[in-house]
Image (cartoon, rainbow, N blue to C red; front, side, top):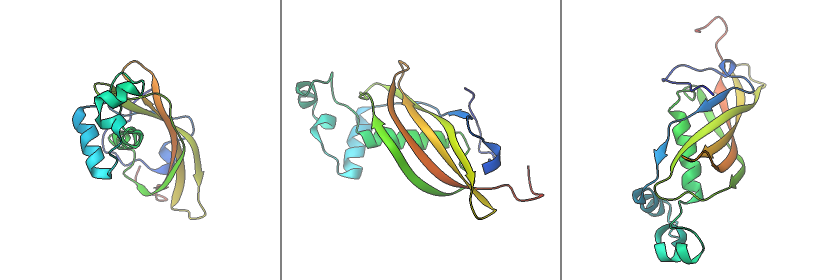
Length: 158
């Protein structure tokens, strides 16, 4: 799997079904959990109370599922492929498959699962299948996300 880097001008035609991408990683800290709770109002004890999380059967506090999802979406933007995105169309098939703990390092991997033109000649749709992977190579989340992307202008830049 190769990484796409830089802030290049990637158009819809530049990626096809099966192309694989990998974003950088981030190590989850206490600050991530506390700030996410404050930002979203998600003050669930599994994320903020060590004793409660352990009594619930976890080794310690776990990251919010939507935090892991948002990090995957955000970290993949650092590959530079989203410079021509005109709209984010949504999420499908979100599954949290394993807990993310403080100290885990996660990164996104994505594959172009579908690429189709739209009725408007200047744009197309990409659907990416995401995996969020921890430092042990375990998949901790999967989901699909779709984007409307500008097509390369006819006779335009390459």
